[in-house]
Length: 171
Image (cartoon, rainbow, N blue to C red; front, side, top):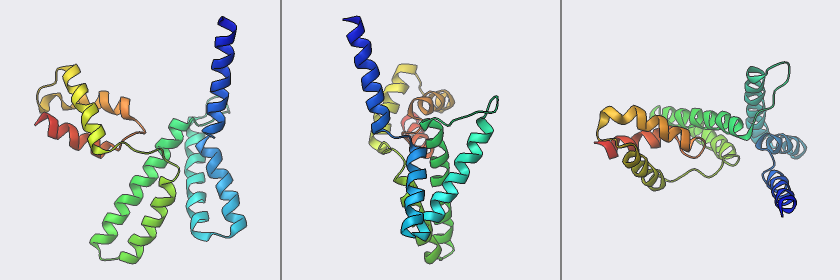
């Protein structure tokens, strides 16, 4: 029974890895396809992402080698998405809908590589549980709650949403 269990574990792990083709690998494959298809807008965004991923990979290297995990890749993508959202907001304030639309298109491409984010309601449910579990009572406990939640929700929810929910729940 032990051997069969480990075989099944290894097999399911291999299947999972192939199903979840590394996000970075998917970006690289899509970059090549965008070149072939001459999709200039998509190509520009994917080249930018490739550059940011390579930059992060270099900063993570130890002993000359380094490969980003999907979690690290997601962090890079989330940062890029956040930058686009901030740009959209600024362009809309400046009444530059043409530039805002271009940023929205880029954001859509970036979001296609990110896992589905939790909704505010899902974050609220998890936050309520964590607040109860930690015995948090007021805003003075926000830092501890945020630290625990962000660790748990890393790559699954945006920090701004988590912060908003925690503030509301502790107020």
